[in-house]
Length: 401
Ligand SMILES: Nc1ncnc2c1ncn2[C@@H]1O[C@H](COP(=O)(O)OP(=O)(O)OP(=O)(O)O)[C@@H](O)[C@H]1O
Ligand SMILES: [Mg+2]
Image 1: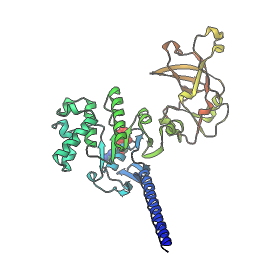
Image 2: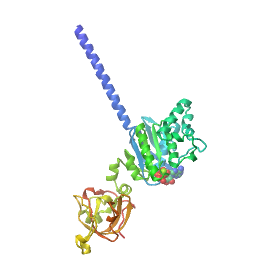
Image 3: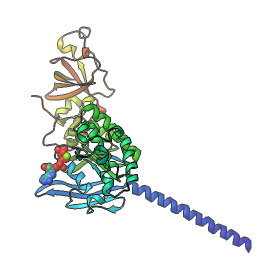
Image 4: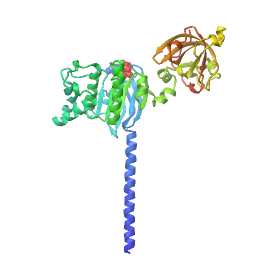
């Protein structure tokens, strides 16, 4: 009896443990699931009078994720960020943070830090007081305040400038003060509205890397606005490509760069050549499924055409590019001009009624192909995107004039 009792109680304990473990497991899973939906935007819409700024904004952002909002001027990026921060109201939809609806909370109760394009520092306050401002408002005790301000100043590498006034700082340093001021209150979410746009290229790169390092080390969920596709591709866990107040495509850098959802997305990322399918047929050797074909400049190849000159190969001194294994037919073209983009040369080539952008690695200025040179153009058929829609106007699709 006793034995039975013991074994049954052992069983009970065992079951209890299993349940507890099961409970821990489900709560861990629940937590992980909640982390995946840490910031949830659903059905957000906003108009100013009769001007619709954005609508149908739906997104799930994980805890610690770095999201870039990318899109042309006026597409609603800043207004969306301001709505999340509570600086603009919304006409419809919900903003949920960690399961809590914050849609109608005032900005100071949202736990969100924001850095603007133009650092709005208090000009009459030293760096240290600018950074401490938010903590003063929250009535944080002086000792704790000092500790946190010092820690953040160290993080943004401004300890030596703590006693300076904003006018005694460079643009990059001022923007770091603005960043420190947003970080010191330990926000749950950090919103950065083009914080780098006023800075020169070198400082911009440095601060960009610094922001990403700090964001990673603090595990901060971050939304970063930029016009700059290179910046978006470099920094982001995911990119939200916005167009006319909608999120046109969400995905990682690879997806946005190589698999645009439509011609508008292709027109914004990767400098795609967008070509009507009939015009693309000579390049592809077949008629594409979609009405448009998108080809990145680096998916097109150039070879100087000696036969068109009536020259022997040996008389032509230009380098030839190795062709991809799955290249389309040769299409005769003429080089119209080129742009030097640092390590890339972008040629504009007239080819069978099209003007194509073709990128070639800039190995040496001696290898530059001259204007008016006749060439053969080849497409890498593995990189052809057939697209569904036709944009009203695309920045890269041009017919040769
Ligand atoms: N307070 C306002 N009143 C009326 N219209 C506004 C207001 N704020 C923004 N808009 C309009 O909303 C649209 C989106 O503006 P927003 O500033 O969000 O664009 P953006 O994508 O941030 O552009 P940019 O890249 O130029 O900063 C624009 O057409 C703008 O004129
Ligand atoms: Mg803006």
